[in-house]
Amino acid sequence: MTETSVDDGVLSRRARLLGPTYHHFYEQPLLIERAEDVWMYDREGRRYLDAYNNVPILGHGHPQVVDAICEQSRVLNTHTRYITEQPVQLAEELLGTMPADLDSVIFTCTGSESNDLAVQVSRAATGGSGFIITDCAYHGATDVLAGMSPEEGNSLGAGVYAVRPPLRPGDGQRFAADVSRCIEQMRAAGVRIAALLLDTIFSSDGIAAEPRGFLQEAVRAVRSAGGLFIADEVQPGFGRLGEALWGFQRHGVVPDLVTLGKPMGNGYPVAALVARRELLAEFARTRKYFNTFGGNNVACAAARAVLRVIRDEGLMQNAQRTGAYLMEGLRSLAGRGAAIQDVRGAGLFIGVEFRDGAAQGADASAEVRRIVNELRARGVLVGATGRGGTVLKIRPPLTFAPVHADLLVQELERAIGAC
Image (tube, rainbow, N blue to C red; front, side, top):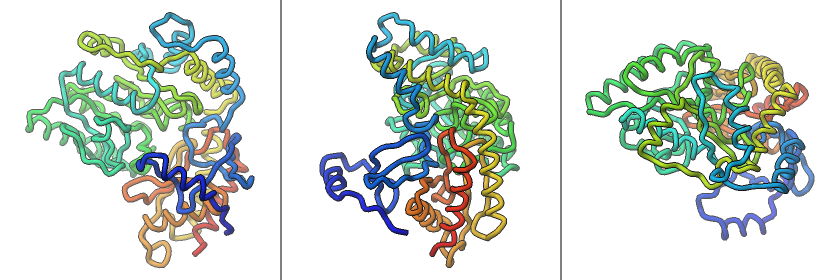
């Protein structure tokens, strides 16, 4: 395929001016100038089907969100130490989507802030310092969360225990047993458990969705030991999984704390921690928390618009329908060749796992890297996830339609066959 070249001036300036922590996707970097709905456009006007970016969950530049941001910016934008209507309205609407036990909100700016705050609250509420995560999880970029994000190659923090994710349908009991063993290891080490922190679709572990309810036994074990369950909904939340607005609802459990972020403002930075009031009261007894930009009026307007569009445009239902259609196409493709080992997911959050030896003896990690870059050359953007990056991560805007799913499957088939 013919590659669109990146402007070397921008790339060299970026390398010179931005810190060395910045990276880019793809072997051939992509210089994006604009985006609309499910499409991103480079400087030459070539369009790319966005089947990866989770933040613009309503599609890039959704007009209702843009209008809400602009209109509120003209009127007022201040912090929550002034009494204004917008944070209260957003809290009412957000809590209206949650189980009744989850009755309080603290607004932040990012998923990392929400998860960091959830860790602080769980420590204060339980008196514990032990946390259980999965062994390829990503939960955020703060100092504490780096030790709970082994996906980034970080070492586990003090008191953090990792278990294998339940990627196969029969893994639920094994997962619960692993969690119980961690609890026993904590007891033996004199560590009190604070919480089980899980991304409810296991986004960075390789994506795990079935069977519904497989989290229940592990959550029961943690609560019996005096710990809490923190549901990280930063990636799976806001209707992406199709059947429900929040991933934990697929499992029939009510978390003690829920963290939200990434797509909450469709690109505007806004996030939240939702919790049982008594947990936040215990935290507030010894700690104060204030976030200058968390819950500002413009952020609240953006988040309210996101909730409204998901409801009014039936995007959760579209995620379920189009996701099922896309899964069918991917499974049909898997049945026609030896490269794909498994297709799993829910709604418009899908993982395609590859097996070793799929192409000329290459290991699965190398094959997935090749396919991700080949798809980019063919105008389709996806990512990789899981231990070693052996799983294609498909996570498009909820406006994705069957015609887009057909294009993705068609180009994936061609990318697998390209050498």
